[in-house]
Length: 425
Ligand code: HSE
Image (cartoon, rainbow, N blue to C red):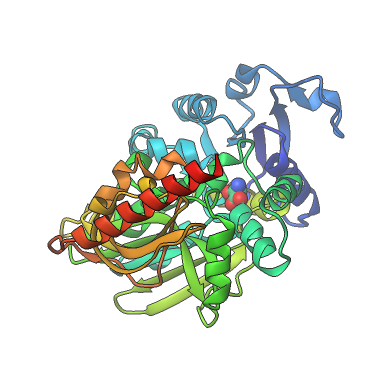
């Protein structure tokens, strides 16, 4: 292995994890020469001469072979990564938002400059999913890739179901343990899992799908009523990122999902992530490992640095396919939608409804809704409403069924609620 000189951007949770994993590896032949940080006033354990606030000091240093970018600001990360490549340096990054939003340009820039970008640490922490897709599944058509792609939300849901901990406390713990993003709404609203799914769509199916075209719903709207519904039905909830291929169409989305006690991923708990894929020939494969945290993610970054030292690069093999595959939101999902007020739910958005429960405290309907309708989702974001996927797989859209009868029931419920609130006044 060549002796590697690293220029590091960011010294937060993952940066420190990388530093520790390098120091603890007894066969890694390399060192971090300089670390660019934003807040020089912060107390650090390492000698001051290692730090700088001047990015050019690293980007222009001819002794530095590899740039490692581990900051949380996606815009600044893009500038660093793009200028590193243009300066003739290969890069390791773990910034999933930046990668998901710019992957097609990043692939073009790698071709143009001949330099490489590796980002295993950006997707499911320590699970080597990108290299597995690239190297092992490069030529096998995949039918499905899904799983638990966010450690913080899995940690929170585990605490809610197993320790009956309160949501705010569980989120505070996930932040304190270094699992959550600097802005934890990216975790709990499902954006982080969506960025990871968007990246995997490229490596699994050869598609470039910008995050805004993928529907995401997180766990922040889960109510006590939803938790009770799950417990009463012997279910748990996991935040799942899923992509399915039907012939030449791929559908993908991020949603909390009810999971039965015998589900293959039920025992994936706390900050662990899981990737489950179905290949045309190999059938199902599962990968489980820590998806967040300083050392597991630092180890994934170290593995990428080491891979660059022997000139490894992603080949994006799935792009060279014979048949054209495209991303689509023309699929129906069966969802449970709960609401605290009858006027919140838009029954017209459903294609059909198979079950409903209307009461004064908490109501829900279970029915099929298209991803197209969900992605418009104005009514879903207004509060007092939550969506959970049932355990059924999505299917291609069929015709719309009438739900007029249910609408009049809801109107009655609304009148009842208004009457009650007038009496209460
Ligand atoms: N915030 C992320 C998570 C970190 O909780 O999974 C790892 O990408």
